[in-house]
Structures are given as C-alpha cells and as structure tokens.
Length: 420
Image (cartoon, rainbow, N blue to C red; front, side, top):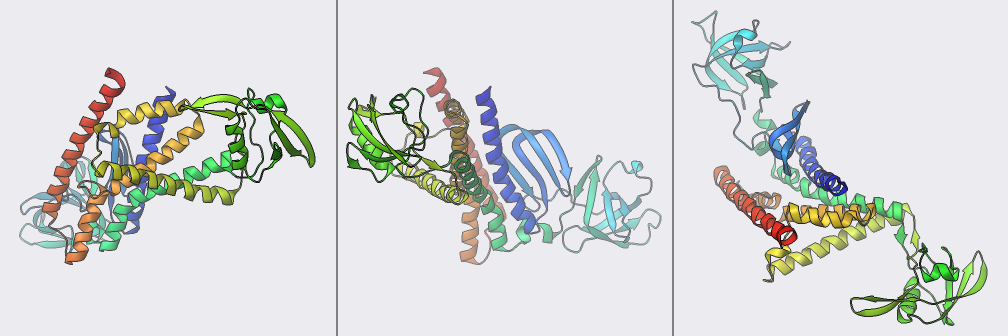
C-alpha cells in the first residue's frame, strides 16, 4: 500500500506541476484557460474557479490545460437559429441561451441573422417582439453560452492562444517542462536541508550501531588527524585508507572537544562487485546550511540532467533495446524498490523522474511540448505559422504513435517483472 500511495503522489505531483507551468504562463499571456486536468478520460472530480474548471480524470496517464483557440470554438450561431439573450448592467449580452429557453423567462428571444463571438463581439437578429426590424446587440467579453444548463465562456480572439505573440505562445508551452526542472531543484534543496550536504572534512558523521567504529569507541563529530601516522586532510583520505585495509588494525588519532585521543579500529571486510574492501560503519560528514542546500540543488539537478542526456545519447547511438524504456508498470516496480529504502530516497527518485519528464517533453516529437516548440521555430524562420490543420494532423499521428509505444513498453514491463 505504501508503494501505491508513493506512486500516486509522485506521479500526480509531476503531472500537476508540469500542467501548472502551462496554466500560469498561459494566464499571464491573457489566454483563456478552459480546463486544468490531471488524467484523461471521464471526470472523477470537477470544480470551477474563475474562468477555469479544475478536474481530476479517471486515467492517471498525464494531464492537460485546455486553452481557448487550440480546438475549434464550441458554438457557431448560424442564421435562423433562435436564442435567448440575457443582459448585464451595461446592457451588453451576458448570456446566450441555446436551448431550454423556457427556463429563462426574462431572456429576450431573437432569430439570429449574424453573430460574431470572436472579433466584433456582436449578435444581430430579429427580436421576437419586433420581427420586422433587425437589431444589433453588443456582447460582453466574458459572456457565456448556455446549453442544457451548462455555461461555456466565449473566447474573443484576443483571449485565444493563436492571437498571442510567438514568444508568449512558446513560453506557455515551454513552462511545463521548465516547471519539472524547478520542482526537482526544490526537492533536492529540501533533501539537503533535512539530511545535510556532504562535506570533505575529516570529521566523522553518523555511526552505525553494528559497525567497527562504534565498537572501538569512535563518536560522531570526532575529527581524524592521522591514521597509522599518515596525515589526514580530507574525508576522502579517511575513506581510502579504510577501504584498503580490511581486517587490519588502524591507529586513529582523533580530536574530540579539543582533546586528542588514540583509538584502534579494525575495519570489517566486505565484498562489493567482486572487490574486497574495509568498512567501519561511519557515514560521511554533512553540514546543514541553507546556502549549501541551494548549491546542492543546482548541482544535483545539473548532474541528473546530464546523466539522462547521456542515456538518451545511448539510445540514439544505436544501442537501443526496448528493455531500456519503462512505462508506468516499470516505474511502479522501481518505486517499490525505492520505497523500501526510506523517504529521502523516495524524494530523490521523484526529483529524478521530474527531470526525466521535463527532458522527454522537450524532445522535438509530435504531440509533445518539444514538437510544438519545433513548429514555433519553423514559424520564426518562415515568418508565418504552419497551417493549423497540417500541424494538428502531425500532432494527432504523433500522439497515436506515442500511445502505441506506451502500450508496447507497458506490455514488455509486465512480461519482464511479472511473467518471466
């Protein structure tokens, strides 16, 4: 159960912060965001706040922010269509009732002659009580259409995604992956604040209860000055000597509270990957410092970003194997292993997955954020956007292929972990 909870929390957090990046920068650009969704498929939870509906959907395989203008707008009022109009205090159309008009006794019924809900924001028609005269009614920027009792806010062109400048559109798309890197950075900072940042001082960290150091009387905080008369200047020196001398008596000269002491320690023998080394049961020293925690956040984020790119290079270089990819099942199995190692390992695993999600989404593949950014790059070079229908077809095919790849990877994970 702990693995299930950890998997849901991690995956949910990664998707949430990714989509939150899209939402924040889309709203900053003035784009109408109709829905912020975690998951796909039928709605499990729905709550509207302001202009946006926040939903949790049944299939936890991603999320999306539905921005006005990315899909064809919902309503097209054709000539001859009868609608009801409700007005705001400025006498502008506030609600356009498409059906069940009898439920709105105060609405004004008109037969539509022409309607522009994007540019001029006007609806012209013949009022029911004045059928021989046509009238024009200005529409509010925040007007809604009402169909079957459900209100949908109209999207004037200046609130649509494609009306915004290229930099603003690109930023709204790039913000998703960017937020994954920011999330990882802050998770690494929290880990460093709680655990401390490893230092290279020759000072003993935590002592394990069953180790040789504890048996010999060494304590956390002891400063190692020499080992077998060899000068010690760093923690690396301590580790190197201990590793090279399993089952050998070592004379530690340490300083404890300003007083020097000599303590004999015999490292225990341990074999790791075929190599026999000595260990005494001491963790490396750490320092809890906000400044160093921030530095560690940068360092860890950079390190794991670099490692993931190295692995991507391996895939591209021709050494590809389907076993090198993991879907939700593979990630779940890995999460199960990490959970058994403790909360800090779970946090680190979440940060690494967040970086991985950010990088994968930046790949120039159709249907991914990187694919959309690639079309923006083409637009910048051409000086005009690619035909929306052609771009939409490319993204649709890319999405279908990605779903097929996910199915293949998931089935391979099931075979590897559960059927072999």
